[in-house]
Image 1 (cartoon, rainbow over the protein chains, first blue to last red):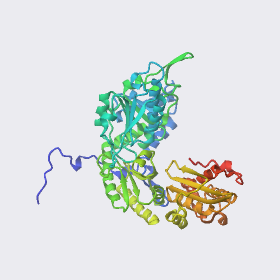
Image 2: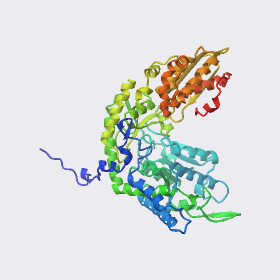
Image 3: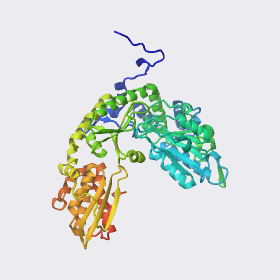
Image 4: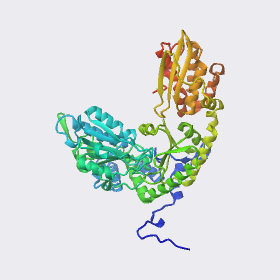
Length: 434
Length: 162
């Protein structure tokens, strides 16, 4: 027998961090339930993830033991709540390698995070004194991509309507990747902001950001990355990404709904005008005018989602405990398995990259002649929960000439057995509609 | 829940072999409705000969439920006078809003009784109603008094139709 020597420096199987999926599954109470008489196969984590007991406990414990309002109480529970809330901010900062917790603004979700930046641009553009980096008017350009979730399209369309700026976008290739061939022309000296998705919620594509970032820096524009689908699934490092803002949401990363994050470079957040006015965001208020608190408080008017933020902190602890590298690898292997398995289904077409490279565990597909709604319905009857529709990314559907797709998406608790259940379910779909 | 309650043979048959599909001329008015949550689309045209619906033609793109529903609508309403047509319309809307508790009037609804099972799937009710709401719009545009004989229309207008 000849043996093949692996050159030094090449990654080995054992180098990859791993975990016991069954042990992880035991942390998620809902994964034990049945749907329509079958064990539930939850393949809709890109929509919202399930929650481990550790997070649910944190939520309950906060309300049972530490509930008070934050940042304004001298009493004990108010102080405990404030410490827990700010502690969660620090955990999130560490999780994304933010230089300071003050760069983490708690919001409701990614949509609110992106709108917050859009309205800060808007507010800086009216009247005098706005920071020039946030001032927009006719002739200025904002660049997005055809791959975006509606939440990274519509706020910019509205902003352009308000300011007279022009919205432009990167096209998507047939293979489901960003078409960067027009980069030099698309991102130019008129560009004020480039905002695009780190990982597509419909195609699963993970966009390489380096080339675009370099061009953004060359022309002096700002860069926002929609990390809603990346922060939950792979290690994200804001310093390494060299972004100016990132947006993500808690409910896709094991935390409750109602809590999300806008991360911004400290110096930029400090230059941004407030968007929502109210309690907590002020320095001093007089009837003749007010001054504003420094970030992040400037952008957190009113009582925030305190328990949800605390639970997000618990989710970060949970994910860190397992390891984001390990989660990334688990999903990579699962994606490779699923892409192979789906290929065996007659008439199935995958939208997006068909190799497990530069893509995450979110796979959109069509079954020839069968509408995704019908696919989803028959799968549900088999206990398999997938999302069907345009996934709030209608331009992608238009790009690929379909009204909708069926999407299976994985997370740290997904198993190859569940991928098999999907494939069996698709056989059933073909039987009903064949 | 049994999925074959939803996908009755009649529905699958109308889906695979739609009756009267395609937009035809002449017509008095048309309406295009979209289900914004899934992107299903249907266009309905009505042609009138006095009070008679001489043709209800349609085209669309979407799931089996919405497209079969359009086929059934065509079959049930073409050739009827508008008063009868809206009696059928009201009965269908009532059936779909009944969460499976309404016993369908077979004589009035014909093949549409097959949609009784759909009413148990709240997420799919909108699919079944899509062509019917487009029809109502098209008829209204053609000058038909769509509220006549439909007393609780206010309550029903809650059904979202894009």
